[in-house]
Length: 398
Image (cartoon, rainbow, N blue to C red; front, side):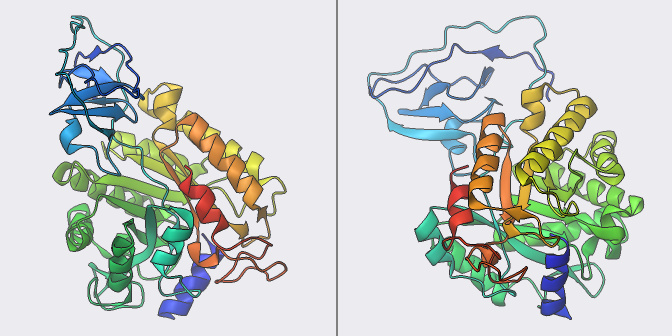
């Protein structure tokens, strides 16, 4: 989201190591009988079913000690299958006494959340997009800094009472959720302006508190944040504090890449996250603006595989665990460098992301999710022939 974000901003501003039992896989069925009772000491994997308080629940991904009754929302690990009858059966598997393979951090999987920017490019009414596509979440650009280390929406003087806050209210009224994006390519950002990790964490916390957030996206770009090692470390330190104080809030870092994976600074970001114990949930790359790449599917897959391999070796994960901490943030239609991602290509990318178990899938931006063949790289359409909201509809299938 490089040049397009420049344009947008200028226009607006001018594992745990514990022993665990893995229960036998039980799949959901049409029967109303209750599955084996959920156990806090057991580990569950995708499609396992357990019951609690008269309801059956299906696991979306690996989980342990996350109660289905309190972790079955949109962003959570369990799906509530509804009431069951006939009592519950206690789990029969005895926890092993030896060590087990270290699982991935649970709860990273998130709904697709394409970017929307209320201050740019004829933003659509949230209800229009939600009703047409079924999308359940948006990533909202951008939170910047004002008066030093004070978080404000881009082009505004605060977090509440303005255009962005009103747009969030519209999103929630339409039945969707929001993930604020903090940073971006340009503008006066919090990372360089907050002097310490503690101060930066305080700014992030204000955003979380203002909107009761379940996730935050730190869009770390350009020479002032991404290519500034001191600021990189400050951001990671702040996110470590946020995770310690808000364990249920998902932390995302979003950054640029090459067609084969992270650059020097992207590699450093991932390795420093490990070294500093930042406990980042999802590392998301922006696989575009490669300099005119002709095959955006191949470039996106190459970039993602490179990131997966880096995350795998850095954290000692399996392939599946590494994929579960990786995300894709593309650019619909024409990129700033005239690369073309068609609706068909985006569908193939989504299918790849689903097949690998990625945890985030988004694009820049819903403002541009309209057709305008030959229209160039502009703020309110994609520059290619497409139906309105086609990329958002594909993304909703993630």
